[in-house]
Length: 214
Image (cartoon, rainbow, N blue to C red):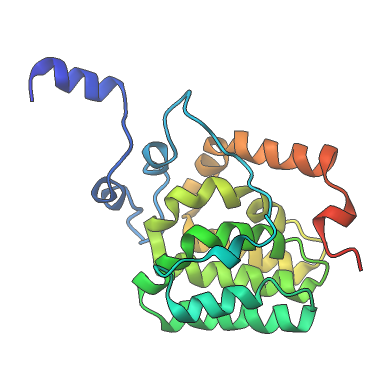
């Protein structure tokens, strides 16, 4: 690589490869903050920001997703709180017992589910959802990076849930992903997506749109 190319690369950070992301992981094994810069796109690129739950999104899960995760994620779409709670707990157990590759196959569909479940009217479902997130990040590590911007809003808000057990679970899941010294950097880096999430919830959403009306 010539001198000019080196200067151009240094001055204009391009999307990181998985190898670079791995190199930027924290020493304690948690997800490294720096690697998110490349994986989340450069300034001026299309930014999807907060992605609300779309009806039927998980019905389109393709064959690349592990079969057990496919079944569980469909259960997570159910309205009944008891069914959802059991499904989230099953998802958590799968994250613990499955290979990293199997868990990673579910990652593209997890943000939409997480966004809805993290705000479920049943605090037991919200708590279980944060426990599921903790096990997921422990298994996938840096591979969560491309999906961070889609979950950062409800993930941060969960840490201030009115139910103490939910807030504690939210903090544990976040700490499982980021070391203490990286957390403030992550929040600053994702502040645009976080503020978009807050704006949407305050100015656009209603209790009826955020949860099952019944």
